[in-house]
Amino acid sequence: MTKSPQDLQIAILGAGMGGLTCALALAQEGFKNIDIYEYASDLGFVGAGIQLAPNMARVLDRLGVWKGIEAEAVNIEETSVRVGATDSELAHVELQYIKDTYGYPHMVGHRSSLSNGLYQGCLRYPNIKFHFSTSAGNVDSFGPRPSFTATPRDSSQAPYRVEADVLLGADGIKSNTRVAMMDKLGIQTGVKDTNQAAYRIMIHKDQIKEDDTELLELINGNKVTRWIGEKRHIIAYPVSNNTIYNLSTVQPDTNFAAATNATYTTRGSKKTMLEVFGDFCPMVQRMLNYVPEGEVCEWKLRVHEPLETWVHESTALVGDACHPTLPHLAQGAAQAIEDGAVIAIALSLLPDTTPASIAKALKVYEKVRKDRAYALVDLAAASGRALHLGDGAAKEERDKQFAALKKGNGPVPDKWADADVQKIIYGFDCQEETREKFNEYFA
View 1: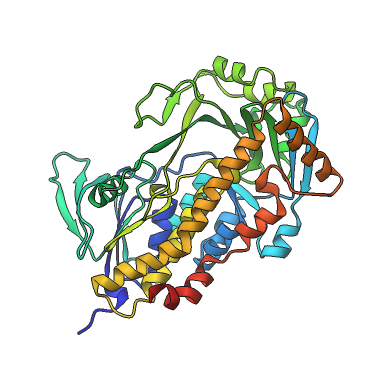
View 2: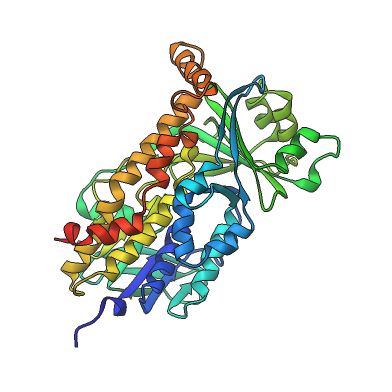
């Protein structure tokens, strides 16, 4: 008897946004054997704020988890770009039109709310099995039956070999699956140092002094604010039903400069953080001062060189394993979620379950997603460069664009808020595209 696509055994390495979406979307398409291997003992649901763009919301809604995530999120109606040093406004963009145009508003939320929403969605399906506290490495076959070694963190349990019909490497920027695949293919790839780092800060409403009316207005509002300066910026917005004010910074990397590629976070110093933004306006100084001593963490912002391929035989890379990005377009999680949605549809449309057909279906996923993902990676990097300009002709030209924008003309140098860029990102329906193009791309 011929095996149907839904009978395939799917192994997913990693329970981040891409891995959880893969599992949930596959289960919704009727797949019966889905196993997720995750090194953490549980999902923890930590992290900071995250932007919930319409292209992400559309997928989450179809997967039946958007309503719960939306209930805890904040609807963003406007964005303001300001000079870090003076707090004077360079640009103001109204965003209410987004819901009418794309069917969903642009919202912001807590990363834990998004992760938990996806996780709870997965728990509805008994055919999704989680293997926590288990590392996945030594990928020794990519097909026809991909296999790897699963190693429980509990040393009393022996490592064991796992075989599947399809292997999805959603194991993040440090992906073992990517390393093994590129080694197997003889493809040289490496970390692309961005020379940037980030602080992620969450100020709870009850921390804010009653007489700090400016910050209370921001936390109670529906606005994303970005303060920009040379080689640095801060983007901030309220999350968790306006109970937390989330700040994400970008600044030159000094603490990680000599570190190994494996190091991505370090304990930061509040004094150093205040010095980095010491020439920013008093408003920013007050916000940064709310951060408790000892709670400053700094992240290294790294990306990888674009990969020639995301697929080898019956194995595919997902999310940050193949297209890590800088945060300047707020699309990292959204693009991983698009990956998961596309993979599920491509595999569900398989005409048969031979390894050759599985490889071709995974190539359909790559064709739908790869150019788009890398275009947005490039656009995020370009937007960051524009925001971080120092004195000179390029900054003068950028500020002329901001001035024209105030009069209602021209593009937005902060590409996240540009209507033409939003059309490219939010107007694309990855699931519809996969269904429409499957036969053409599969052929």
